[in-house]
Length: 85
Image (cartoon, one colour):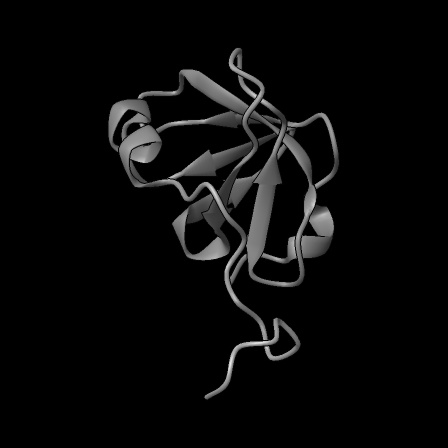
């Protein structure tokens, strides 16, 4: 299990081919990484379950193309999000 406490703002996020596709904005709770805005001004979110390793970069388990297709535009709904269960 990867410790989310090792992930810091401004860290590069790299895909399985070691290419950078994003930069960490900050942790959004213990299970989600909020990424810095892209060229169009949009934040994206990826789950910690994608992370395979953290060194000076955050490494994920999929290609950059797949990651950018699967990332979320909104943070996951939490227990205090106002949604009824």
